[in-house]
Image (tube, rainbow, N blue to C red; front, side):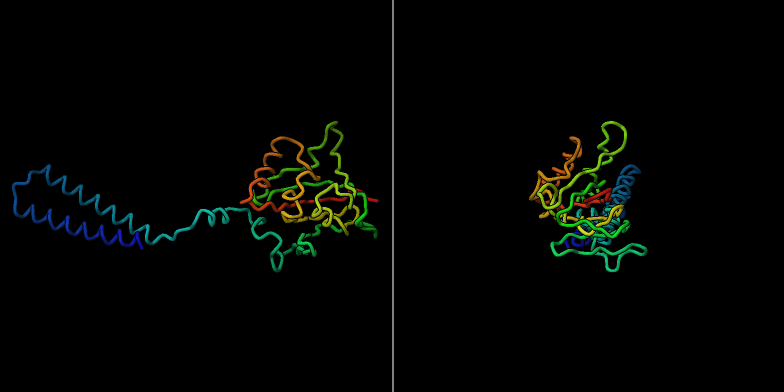
Amino acid sequence: MKTATLVVSLIQGISAFTSTTQNASTKNPALNHSNREDVDIGRREALFGVTFAATLVSTPFFPPEAIAADQKPKEFIDVGTQAPAPEGEPPFVELSNGVKVKDFRRGSGEDVVQGTSSVQIQCSGKLLNLNGVSFYNTKNNNPDGFGAIPLSVNIGKGEALPGLESGLIGMRKGGIRRIIVPSDLAYSKFPGLEPQPTNANDQRALDSVVKNSRRDATILFDVSIERFK
C-alpha cells in the first residue's frame, strides 16, 4: 500500500512539474537552450522515478526465509515427508520415536541388528539445517591409509545417539539405510555421544547448529552395516 501511494504521488508530481515547465516555456519564450535542456532532464528523471516505483508495485515481495527455502537442494526440503516418495525411491518409514528410516539396500542374511547388538558401521552425518553440510564421515578415519575404520557401537549401552541406535535396529549385514534423527534424539540433548566429528572444521559446523536454539538440529545419517553380533 505504501508503495502504491508513492507511485500516485510521483505521478501527481510529474503532472504538476510538466504543467509548470510548459507554462513557463509558453509565457517566457526567452528561455535559452540550456534552460530547456535542464527542463528535459528533470522530466526524464521524474519519469524514471515513476517507472521504478511501478515496478516495485508489480513485483511480489518474498521474505528472505522464503528465498532461502527455495534455494535449498530438493532432497533437503521436507525430507522424509514426501507422500508418495519420489519416483523410483522407497518411502521413509517413521518409527514410534519420530526417527525416519529409508532402506536403499536390504543387505544379506536373515539375522538383523537387535536392541543389544554390537555393530560396526560406515557412516556419514549431515546437517539438514545447513543444506546437508557434512560434519562426520568414517571415510575420514583412515590414519594408516589402509581403509576407513568403521564406527563401533554397542546398542543400548549409551554410546551412540539414541535416534541413530533406533534407526540401526532391523538392518542386515551389507544393508544401507538413511536415518533422519530429530533434534531431541540427537546432539541437542546428547552432545557427547557418538558419532563425534573428527576435526575442528566439522566440529564448528555441528556446533553452529546445535548451539543455536533458532536452528533445527535434525541430523541425517547414511549408514552401511559392515558386521554385527
